[in-house]
Image 1 (cartoon, rainbow, N blue to C red):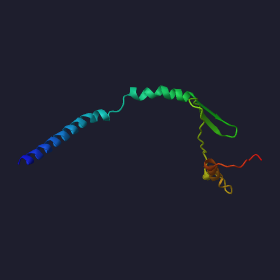
Image 2: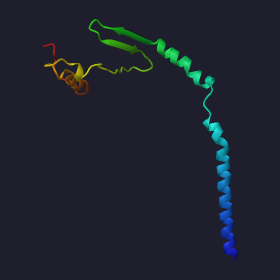
Image 3: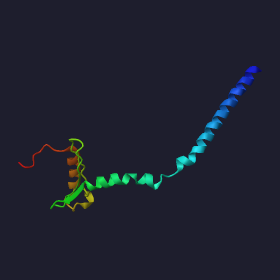
Image 4: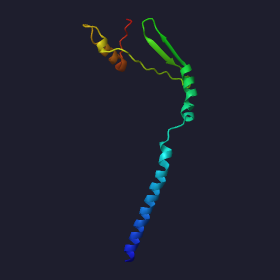
Amino acid sequence: MIMKLFKFSVFIRSAMSLVCLLLLLWGNVPALAQTPSSDQSSSITPYLNRAIEKITEFTLDNGMKFIIKENHDAPVVSFVTYADVGGTDEPDGKTGVAHFLEHLAFKGTTKNWHK
């Protein structure tokens, strides 16, 4: 009889603890769901303005466009290429150039084209 009462008591305490935890969490839900104020979301604006000031854009005579952002924090150079062209832009009879460019971009070549 005492063991049954003890088990019941443990069950009641566990259930009450769970209810209290759920009530605590439920009370915080509105605070978590609030959107940040305009002051918080605009705090990134000065950083973005400084980043945009360091961007240089120019186009070569052959139409290749460059967008350059210098960052002298580390002695490293990195770049991304984007060819705004594909197989649908190739004329009839001259297909495969875009595919060849794709393979050159990720495989490279050891051929010296100036010889």
